[in-house]
Length: 586
Ligand SMILES: Nc1ncnc2c1ncn2[C@@H]1O[C@H](COP(=O)(O)OP(=O)(O)O)[C@@H](O)[C@H]1O
Ligand SMILES: [Mg+2]
Image (cartoon, rainbow, N blue to C red; front, side, top):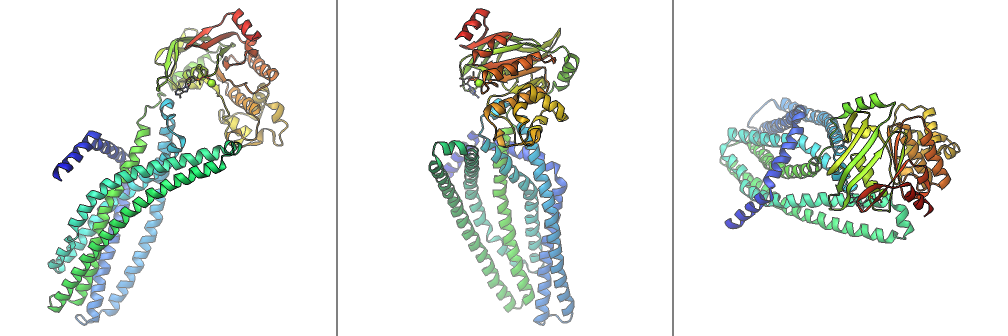
């Protein structure tokens, strides 16, 4: 037995659990420290609750003593005090619940906003490995566990200790022999708490993973209702859900079994404690050592002793819950953060060169995704203001990856990407995204009106500016026919529009931002050839000194581009005019 325990401890140390828990506790401390006033408030409220309950026990002792004749007079006063206590405790409970709700809400939202910000500024390559459902569940339920836990755990620990000690002190004062009963339960509860703790750590992890899975499943189903219907998968998905729910029920019932065993044991311990103090009390009254009143007081005090012991033990699962949730959030927060330290420098660079434009140069670039998929080796690109540079190549060769590298969503392992205007040059970092506008592949409109979507990237844009951008991207052709024109609402992910229409809106949004460098990722793929040419021509003839990089697999627009790079076999090589002509002819 001893050997086994030793083995388990060794295993735990090997798994790094203590280090992990220490780190999570340290992280929690950082948050808790900010809310020390609220924590003290909760503790004081809890203390006053314990004092009120002890006061009530003392008053009821007096009342019983008066009735049984050991003391005379003061019946009315004692009765009045009892009612006073009851009303006082009612008011304190309601007031403190009002205040504590307010504090809870404030801290919960504050912590969530903080974690939200940290999640958004996490390096994209790392966070993109997580399912959005998982992220959502970490942000919502784990962050709530933390805000609730931070506020209640420490106060509860102190309050239960205080309740235990004060009840114990009163007992000793009136009859020390009673105090012994408060210890009967301790060994049993201690033994239980050890086994409980191990089970709880596992259960908590399982529960959090299960919640994330369900959340992800639901989210994905609801955003893909069209696909589910189109493939006639309604029944299949209902069955998926049912099997997940079955898994969920099994897990919850496992929890339930654990809690049934725990509460039975706790109740048995409670009963043993109260019956033995009852017996002892009867004996003491019978032998004349104490009054009836003292006996009733002891019975209620022994109840509060057992209660506070149980509450003390209850702080263990809360602590485990807290560290599990903290661990799940720290996992995310521990990932590398994006470095925005060059924000000021980029702003300065932009302000001094916005009239001449910015040249982008890629040299000897190599990139391999973390899963080992190598996309580039010695890639080159050169793009200057007023130029449209095309990246062409078959699907899956790395066009999108190149744009992600330019946007610093991915960081290159080899080579160099620089932005320069004359002799002035800055390196590419997340800060330099300010210089870019991007039209991603796929539909990336948000819900809200067309104008709101446009103002997302330029808050102070006038209606006129918006309409101009829409005209340049040939989107105004259809927007002007909508009942509310630019104030017409869009559904989630641009629902309600054709693909070509939302592509044109995405282009308008990127143009409205007026950034020196414009990246279009197959952004005209759903347009007819004539419209595609019109859009690109409009961009080219605009006075604004834009550097434009487009990816395409359609050769039809290549002859209006200044330079064409072919992406294939991990290279990005400029094509000669003859090669481009040959490609256009097919
Ligand atoms: N997040 C990612 N993690 C790992 N590999 C990726 C990731 N995104 C794309 N790839 C791989 O990189 C290659 C290039 O993809 P991509 O740049 O999207 O191609 P293209 O845009 O030219 O169609 C593909 O082989 C793809 O499987
Ligand atoms: Mg692509």
